[in-house]
Length: 362
Image 1: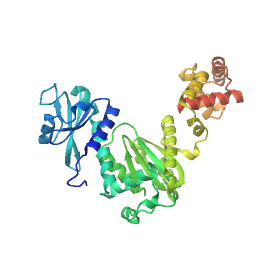
Image 2: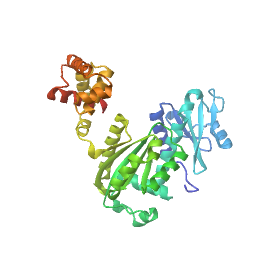
Image 3: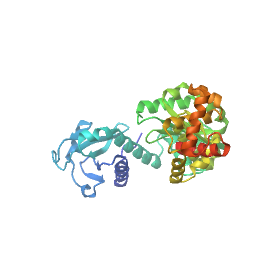
Image 4: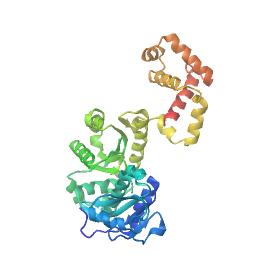
């Protein structure tokens, strides 16, 4: 719960406005409950009066303005109440045609909510949920040492953090986070003995998990229907000492990126090899190399090569999976050789093609 006297500062309001403007691409205003614009992407509007904000406060709901100056100080747009813990803290506005802006409402309110709650957490920890979120963010984003946290904080969570742990990232498909989904995710994670996690805007959760839980958690991620039902991908970072969890987080992001590209539920950083090297190659160099080698191939030929490599260059197994005759496969591989100048059946040439495929998928 936020404090009764908590107020949105001008600096926090401007931070919210700037972040929302960057994501949404529309002019954004933050209005005090007295109708004064305290932050805006249009600096000329700061300090002006905004009548629609008073209507929002009176109704406690969204107010649309369909034409400029329909109300004093108003321009076309949608006005959203900023409500945290059932307390209205202000009004945030997207300027523009309401019909165009409606679809951006979720993004705007979620950005606002996340940034306000982060500010509240920094000033004082109010609940167990905020406590776990604060600890995770400090350890993986700010490189804080675990000694910075008092023992009673972990006692409050009823959780003992070991000397070594790892980070996992759960990525949910689409911008569909709601309070009910947050509650469901919290329930699932706590049921699996995962006590340290935080929501990352717009559709991810970062988890810190003890080394002793590594094997069992991997099995849970791979077999638990709850995660599959929620249509998510999961990246597993490396096991590190607590002071290096930011590194594990980076590894988890790389594993997640691979999981998303391969459309698999779970990817483990420790099982990546060539992908780790490729990721550190400049994007433009990767793209140029892949285009030069396989840019002339059709989607069907690219898919054939993927299946060919998945079957460890076995002509028999590849032909069976593609439901084609072995001679037909030989013919198609020869066509690839003609197009690229690289023979998939030659060791040195096929390494080049394999690397090009990897470069294309990362």
